[in-house]
Image 1 (cartoon, one colour):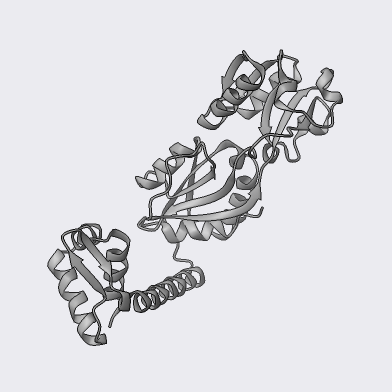
Image 2: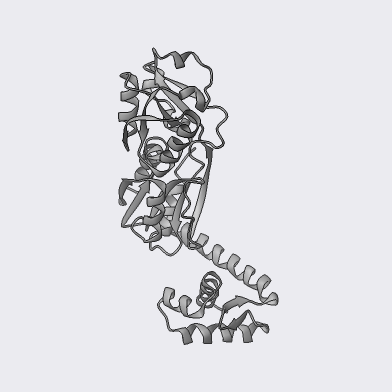
Length: 299
């Protein structure tokens, strides 16, 4: 038994196909088939059941394969530890992130990371979650910082690892300080009727706007933007109201100075951003570097 055989087993489990496993690992199908057959002969039980419908673990093989995957995980941990000790992380790390995380968790994490790994070039791009997921899936970004919710309906491929930040944002209504709404301790969707809105431009916020429309009737959206600072400044100038995740309002100068007032939105069926987390492709050449960066994010 060797590591290469275990990696073949892992890929076959993930793809349920000898041919796809061979394609992903850039080896011939016969090489994988022969290697796994030798492994099965060595341990004395068949690991996979092969048919025209695919290749799946046998009942006896499931527990054994589970142990093999644990071994591979430990091997990866050893490699990560060696890389950390010898500081051989190198190259470029492309991070695709949603704006709420680029403005909050990311700057502090990046500063700490660059202090330990100054040789790594980091590139950051801001996108909405669904596009971030697509970038990571197609290896256009090594690490994605996203929020998963029922508007993020593309789902994650099996090859994408997800690391939860264990933070749940809440929806807040932000209003000018002289607005009558600023006197409320909390607001319902129906309380927002007859107000002008400045909204964030993304699939999630399009869904929120539709929910407001159903609760209040017609919605007067003055404009949409992907820049949260433009939204807060516009609200402070009295152009309208908006909604934001509580995460984006943490230590916010507009709120702290009283130029805008942040009020919890009660009775809404979900929080503002779902589950925040980092994603990376387990097949990416920089997956270890992406995983290392996640260790620097403090929530």
